[in-house]
Each structure stands twice: as structure tokens, then as C-alpha cells.
Length: 269
Length: 305
Picture 1: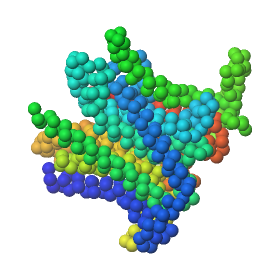
Picture 2: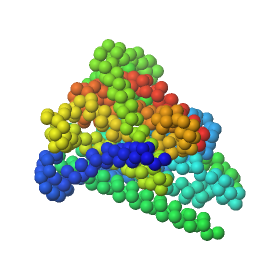
Picture 3: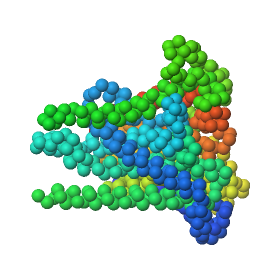
Picture 4: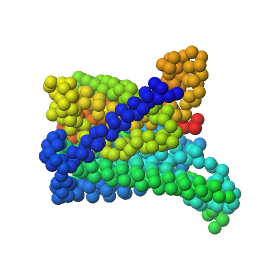
């Protein structure tokens, strides 16, 4: 199958990945630009990183975002894992169709609708908008992403392992925590990471549900982008990309290590 | 103690279902009911900026009195004003064109990945997912510097001598297409890759042995077999793209009309919450069919797995 198709595949891959990565690479390069003009290169400099660190508003927003993301990702991972277990283990229960609908719909629901509806809920029950409302909103949509990630792992999990544990006297809860959870852990961690970055990224839902004193980093970036492109924003973006890339690389290395250890354990009788 | 143990599994399994269920009921489903109610209200200068506001102290007669205050006025207004209708139509059009373009860009990429040596595939997969982890806002922002009249793309084309005057792309619909294709590409590639990777490629060899050309073997075998992936990918791009706000706002300029932008400005600039709610309800009505279809195909795929 080499020949034209082989060459076609290589070209498709190179072009596709160039399209995906070139804009990000350019953004990172121009964060080290000396000039205030983002698109004209005037020499290497880290001055925008220094200016960014002196920008009080930006740092406050980053701190709010980090706390919201950590809290919402953690709660969303617990709720999302529960939802995934409920959907894979219990084939029949009252309202299952509605439940699976509510788990999948937020994945494709336009953010403006989710944001508006959550805001109107908070207003209707008289909940003051701020840190708590943004966190609740983020838990709600990211738990669905966690559920999908964990569910795809649970489907391929061999249920007889859990049954064996219960035959040996473990309670279902114990069987879950000692047998199932360790096996699906990579998916749970991936779900947490996904929830964390979704929260870190979100502009639309946060704009609707946030209140005074709870401006998140994307909201801050957005308000500055509307005024024009500046190298300072490039610097902030580069740091965010760096954090996410390091996180992804670490988790994939950890997962790989676990996989190797597991294989080794399986190999030794 | 024994009783507790016997009871616990039942309680445990109930809790596993009940906790996420109640959460989604309260924070996902009930809010839509509230949006619907407010879409029937009138705008007023107060906090909250709509009336009537229902309260527990109203009593039955007060409740009925206020119920009469609700009307379909906002919907009449919505359908009477060509601005809104055009915004809906143009959103659907832009989303459809972008979905098609995403498919055209994503298919060769997914195909190339699926046919790559097996030991390379996990790396390639990770490379497609990685941009998805980086901020959506940042990725859209990156394109501003590239597409500006004095931006990097025009500089590059000048350098090559292809153009004499800058291409105007930023603040046009073309920039919105580029933005959507770029941002949603992983959503298209992942389901496509999943179906293409599972495919039995000896079928193609058989077809070629029987005299099919490569292209006709592709159309007769690969393409039909990858249809589930195509459908899933298109749904994952099309549905959120219809209500997209960030991309048309940052790349499309003031002249690009999309309903997500309209809703945003009704809410934040005009502070007309009832009209914004009506816009959201109509958008939901438009999208409910594709969403239900998407869920059914997903559920079926899961049951087969």
C-alpha cells in the first residue's frame, strides 16, 4: 500500500498538523517580541512577561480562575464518575432516558444557552452572583465531559473482576473502590484534567454567571482582546499553554508507567 | 450491622444514580423552564429586569393574576423583525458551510492517521487532542494576528509576491469559517479516526484485486463504512457552531450576523432579558432535533460496543 496513497497520507498529516499548530507556535513566538506591534518582529525580549507579572488585575483574575477550575474539576469528577457508573451498570431505572439525555446534551449545547439559563436560575432563587455561581455552573457542564470519558473506559472494563471480589466477600462499595476504581483511574484522571481545562478556558458561561469580584482570566483576556492584540496577552496565553502542555505530558507519562507496571504484574505469575 | 450491610448496596446504588441525576435536574433542566417563563415576561427597569416576578407570598389569586401578565409578545416581536430571522438563517448557513469545510479538512487528516504505522498512532492521536486542551479563546485570538490586513498571512504572501494588496479576511465571514474549522477540527477528526481505524482494509485490497480503481474503491467501500464517524463528527461541529459567540465576535467583525452574538448583545448591551430568553428558546427549538438525533446515534453506538 505504499506509493501514491502512502504519499497522500503523509502530505495530509503534515498539512493537517501544520494547520493545527502553526497559529499556536506563532502566538508563542510573538510573545517574546520586543515591539509592541504583535506582527512585526523587533528582537527577542521577555519584557512582556515582566509587565504581565506587574498587572494586578490579571494576577487576581488568574487566582480566581485557578480556584474555580480546581474546585469545579474535583466535584465534576466525582459527579461525572457517578453518572458514568450509573449509565453503564444500571441498564434499567426510572427516568434513565432523561438522565442519559441530560448527560449528553451539555456536550453540544451552545454555551450562550447554558450560560443564560444558569444565570436566570441563580437570579430566580436569589443566589448572589460570584465565585460560587461560576463554580456551580462549571461543575454542571464539565461533569458531563467527565462522564463520557469515564464511561468509555467502564464499557471495556471486565465486570467479572468486580463480581469475583464480591463473591470473595467484598461489599459492592469495597469492590468498586478496590477493584474497579484503580483500573479506570487513568480515565478518571483524564476526566479531571479535561474538566480543569474546560473551566480554565470558559469565557461565555463565566461571563453570564459571574459577578463583581469574580472576574476570571478568560473574561479579563477577552476584555483586553477587544481593545486590540497586545504582546502582554500573548505572554499570558503562552504561560497558560505551557501549564496545560506540562499537565498533559505528565499525566500521559504517569499513565504509561502504570500501564507498564500493570503489564509487568500480569506477566509475573 | 447485618441489616446495614444488606441495605447499603441498595442505598449505594440509589445514591450513584440519584446524586448526579438531581444535580442535572436542578442545574440543567429546571433552568430551561425558567428561561421559558422569562421569555414570556416583559422587560422592566428593576433587578431582576423583568416582570412579573413570582413569589411564595403571592398566594393562589396573586399567582393567577401574575400568570395573566405572561404573553407571547416577545416571540411575535422576534418573528416580526427581519434582524432576528436573518441572524438565525445566517447562523445555520455559516454553521453548515463550516461543518462541510471541517469535514473536508478533517477527513484526509483522520485517514492519514488511521493508515499510519500502528506504533505512531497514539502519538498522532495525542497531537490532535493537545490543541483541544489549550484555550479556545487563545486559539481564536491567535488568528487575529495572522488574518489582519497587516498580519502574518499577508506579510507572507507579499514576501512570496503572490499578492499586490492585502487580502481582507479579518472581520468577514471568511474569517469565521477559518475560526470554526480550526477550533472544531479535533471534534471532527476524533470520531472519523475511530471509525476509520476499525475498518478492515483487506476489503479495499479485495476491491482493487477485482479491478476497482483506488478512487472508486474509496467511494464504494471506505466512504460508506466511515459514515457513522462522519455523522457524529458533523453533529459535534454543527450544533455548537450554530450558537457560537466567541468566533464571530472576535473574527467576524460587526457585520457578521450570528444568533449567539445577537443573544449576547440583547443580554449584556440592551439588558433585555426577556428577549434574550426568547432568542435562546427559539434557538433551542431549532437545535433540539439534531441534538436528539445525535444522542440516539451515540447511545446506539455505545450499546453496540
